[in-house]
Amino acid sequence: MTKFTEQLHQAASSLWQKSMEHPFVQGLKSGELPLTKFRFYLLQDRYYLNQFSEFHRAIAAKTDDQQTKQFLLEMAQDLKDSEMAVRENFFKQLKIKPVEIAQTPVAPTAYSYVNHLNMTLAQDGIAPAVAALVPCYWLYQEIGQKLATAGSSVSYYQEWIDTYDGDWYAVNVQRILRLTNLLADSSSAAEREKMQLAFVRSSYYELQFWQMAYEQEEWA
Image 1 (tube, helix red, strand yellow):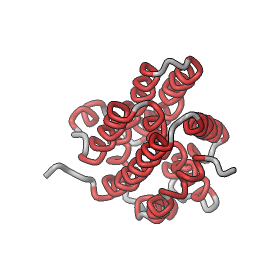
Image 2: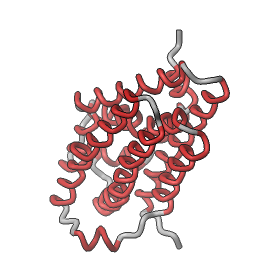
Image 3: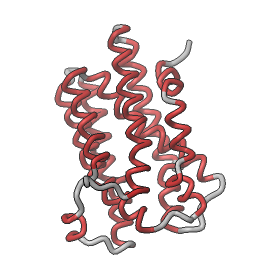
């Protein structure tokens, strides 16, 4: 029997392929991505990851299932302890100071992506909200694994690739996929449609996030 997450993957396959082929991602592999674009990405991703972690907590607050609640809280804490810690290391290496962080506006795409997550929870509930989380985990793993086969000549970019090709990261991806499938199994057909829509929309925003960083998107 096909897992629901396999159905989700297929539904967003064209968007994921475009992410794989995006100049930002390809520039990480080739080492030709300008460092200014990577710095912009890191600044926007810092905002996104903080909100992403809090979104786990927001879903946890709405569920009565104790296992789901505990899982989401653990994932939120793990984001702070691992992935966000990696970002802080990048900030030190690239000399991104607190004043630069404070003075950098949230870009339109980062703002819209976070709003999409929050609106999904508010309007559609827990299962679609969890599905909206998945592309950020799963797509990054696929990109990391594919880029790892060639590696990058730039140490910063190789460190980024290694983050998403690691065993610890793979464990978290499998955990979120397992929860998504469990929620789908106990959901109605209408709710599974909402889960798929949330997943595809998040996949769209993942693609737009690369473009946002590549063009160093501004509001005007």
